[in-house]
Image (cartoon, rainbow, N blue to C red; front, side):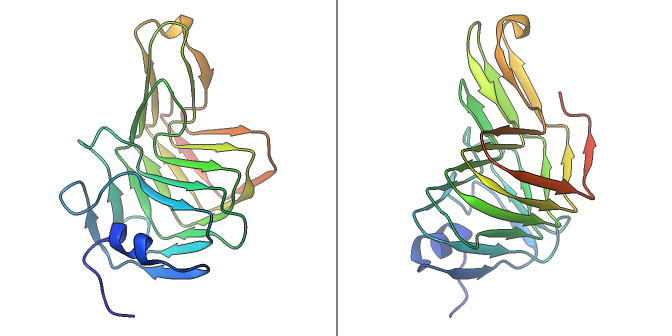
Length: 178
C-alpha cells in the first residue's frame, strides 16, 4: 500500500492480518494519537530497529500502544515504546488484554505508572492480562511505578507484569525498572 504519515492512520486502516512497516524515526504526540489501539484484529507492526523506530507518547499523558481481544499472529518488532503514562491502571507502555503476541528486538523505555494510596497498578513497560506470547531480545529500561504513598500502592512490574497467561522471555535486558 501507499506510505502513510502516521502509525495511527496505518492502524486505523489495517485489515485483519495486516503488516505495518514503520520507517526509522520518532513518532510522537505531534504525529500520533495515543494510545495506538489494535482491537479484535491481528496486526504486525514492524520497525527498522529498537533504537531507531520510536513510538514516544511523552507529553500525551496516555498509554503508548494496546492490543485488545487480538488473538493470532500479532507481532511487535524493531520498535521502541517510550513515554507512556497511566494513572491508577495497567500497562503504561504496552497493554495486552486477551491477546497473543511475539515481541522481538524491541525496547520499553521510561514508561510510568502513577498511583495513589490504595491503587492497583501493574506493568509500566508491559502489562499482559489474560495474554500469552514470546519476548525475544527485548530491552526494559527505567520504567517506573510511582505513587503518593508507594507503600500503600498495590501491584508491581516496573518492567513487565504478567497477569494470567503463558510467556517465554529470553535474551532480554532489564535495567533500572522500579
